[in-house]
Length: 330
Image 1 (cartoon, rainbow, N blue to C red):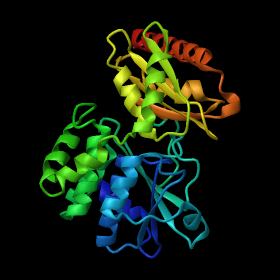
Image 2: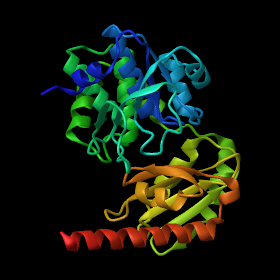
Image 3: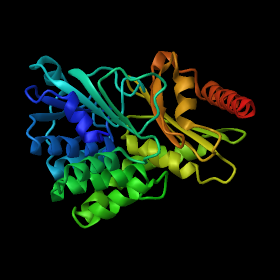
Image 4: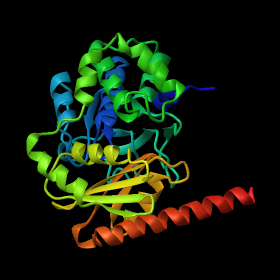
């Protein structure tokens, strides 16, 4: 039986440059996984570059890219350049996290569930793994290669972000990868670049968001006004989920060309990724994990806070009903 890296290499043409593409608007896990996969492929003799769609919205991710000196190829240059074969990491067109690939899609490596079949030669989707970086670490182990300090640090940062420092959706693969990488990389730097970077100018908006929230049962939604980094949405969502009466939180930024949102769930029967995907259908795009999701709404499709909260509540009720029916049917 072929192992994942063997299968990936069988799908690749060694004479054509490889493009490792993250999900649009990448985070630390996507970037860490992309960098580590690219470094491994370079060692194995492939020509390789990293690209992404959208933009870097995270202050701390920009710091990570700068401090680790991660080379990136602009998406426009990747599209207009010579023929390339593309491997998507931490996302997929089928999951709706990538609008377009910059080259010919050859492989998908992800840990997000997909609602559509993958149409490419190589697919490695491990939904039980908390981070895509841990999956890429397993490729290094399969190859019998030891990552250098920079690569180990990038993978550590990715694992720590998506598992919230090993406190959320952690698999044995995440734990083994973290243990193996901890002393090989710069653990202090990995920790620092994942810590959220907020600024004093955001405090008034944080205060307003905490005062002007809306609640419907166990669901809470609040808006932030202004062009802020994605960390602000994530921090508020994580913080508000600490409320004992609340099981699902949505924070939406009502500003700019696309209204970004971040959602969190701590209920086993409310899948944040599926709920947000359903609610944003026809309004924008979104999805993610059962416990954590994100997305975008077109400004002219935004129904307002009250209506969006009601849509989320109704979608969750429908989702619960469907799963109860499925359980009874089985």
